View (cartoon, rainbow, N blue to C red):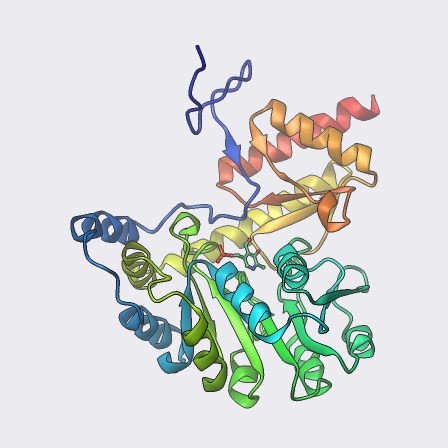
Length: 353
Ligand code: PLP
């Protein structure tokens, strides 16, 4: 008979638990208040959600100092990214992004009919001059993930401002700040100021990372009123479900959640990077809740991935991002990070012996 798959269980000999470090989900799971809110919402499941997600937008606005009228919520930020590209891109237009930018921009851009131009970076950091030089008369969208997935690279505030200043007014700049809450560098702005200052910049955010709600599918974006109006017309009337709305409100209210998550991330991202480097693996600098581990060759990355899997650890191969020598590893719990360090140290030792 065929055995059903049971999540979290492992069939590997000697491995009794699967550790998933492949999607940059927060290390602590969902905030307890969000779990309570989701549970309570189950009793109201027969009711349609508030199509405008009004209380959620107000809570986001209060938390981040933003005008709720300029916030649009989505079924994950992926949904909002897709709508923006479909609304402003299309056949005969160009979308510009850094060479190793988040894959959704490439996928949706091509689906929308745009010519996607991937601009080479400098040492894996977006190159503003090269991006501006790539702009042509057909360019309609410029997409910058900051800090970037899968590289972890951060572009300082003045560079992002220089990018916007160098773009025509009829080009929409999407600043994807999915990892904003993890950033501690004072020279960082997720894009709020630029959205306020220009009529053609959008900042996207998510509850999937630090807020631990990836499975709820909840994202949001902050934008000029005219762009908010466009999204309001093309999104589904109930695109965010009722449990996600309540979970988001509760997650924002969870005391100390961001502070605790950031402190853990700072500590264990540093330990993970140092552990990899000590084992002879390059760890690219990261401002996110993951580390890009570089094994020098594609064969090295494949073998390292296999060694991790043999211990039940799932990391992310990023060959699809044209980074075949790398693995992207999410910062998990202390125990999980230590397990990765031990496994890869052992892997490098046996490889070279
Ligand atoms: N943007 C970036 C840069 C991401 O890394 C991700 C998820 O990995 C997303 C957007 C999508 O997030 P969501 O779960 O909100 O759709």
